[in-house]
Image (cartoon, rainbow, N blue to C red; front, side, top):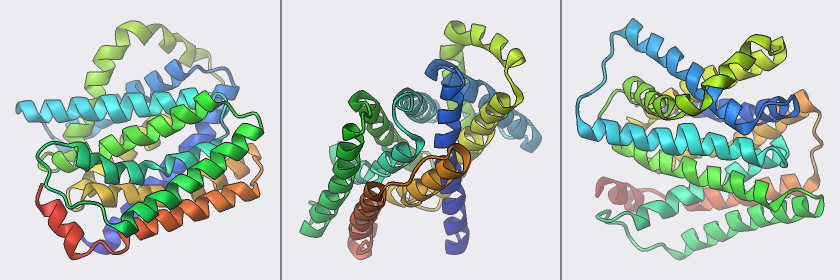
Length: 300
């Protein structure tokens, strides 16, 4: 994949995922539950991708591996990550949520060491130091937010969502042999089949929702779910899991920017310190990845 094109896709994904936090916070403030937001994202997002599949005449694979990977992507990314974000944002601001999600690259780095059969080198000192910087950034932000009455359960949910996004990055690396459109659609289809019997009654609320609320739901479903995950899988075909996690570099910046513009949230000094520490950690973690890192990825 062309490097400039990959960077462009990365920026678009970062912007979309950064924008979702103030939108989710807005929907929660206007009475929508975490269950409703998650279900609407999956329901509408599926039909958007299905229409794209029909237009491109794409098809689902009959390979069992295809459906296993789609199920993993659906459960971890389309359901758990989105649901945990919606739960967490009931008590956590949009700006703080976008910062906590930036911990995903560190989980993406650590997860492969837990997967049997992946031959990876032992972490080097600079990598451990980088993880320390990232952890320090999260601790600074979380500690200050807890002092300002943020809920520790909400923070834990957002960090849990960051972990789920790391799982998505790893799984997407294994799904690169399949069409990103078909895998994304299959993932949403699986989750829709599982969730519809318990959530179909929420559809009636769409018809009576105010236009700004309905617009927020559609934006989350079309852009932050369907298109964002489609772009992520497209990027996975020419990169690796760690590169995918780079999208989290700019998520806090976009998240705070949109939170200030759309919700009028305040930018506090500890937010900037936290972002700086996390970015230093991520830079240290990935900057020297040349021969050693590429060989580690090739060994998968």
